[in-house]
Length: 190
Image (tube, rainbow, N blue to C red):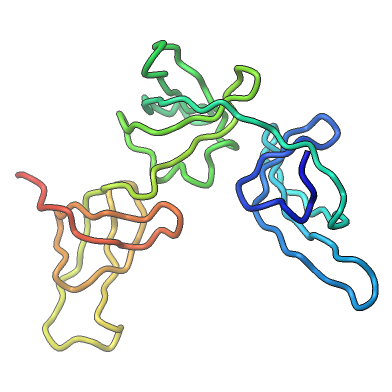
C-alpha cells in the first residue's frame, strides 16, 4: 500500500480489481484544506485513460510486477508477439498495451516485459533505439532559418528534426521517451 502523494509516473496500482499505470500526477494543495493528487491513469486491460483525484493520504494498492527479458518477434495488426529469452515462451500483448512505443519496436529487439500473476501487461522500452534514415532532404550550407535542423523520415515512418549533416542511410539514435534525435551512430553499409 502506498499513499496517493507517493504515486509517481510509471507506478502500477490496483483500484477496484483493475490495474492502472500512472501516466501523469500532480499534487494540488488547497488553501486551508488538505492536498489532493490529480492523476491520469491508463487501464492496463482496455488501454483507456481515466482522470482520478485522490486525497493525499488516501491509500492505494501498489502492484509488484515481475520483469523478464524478451525479444520482439513481430506484430500482426492488433497483437504484438515476443519471445522470453530464458523459457522461449511467446507472450502476446494487445496493441493497446504498446501503443505509446509501438513505432520504436524493431524485429529482434531485446527489451523488458512486465508480468502480473504470470500475465504480460506492459513492455519496458530501452531509453534509446537505433533507426535508419530512409528519406533526407539535402542540407544547404548557411541555411539556418529553421535553427540548423531539417526533418528526416526514419525506417519506422517517424519524422525527426536532425542536424544538416545527416544523410539518407545514416543510423540515428532516437530517445524513446521524447522521440528526439540523440546522435548519429554510423553510416549503414550499402
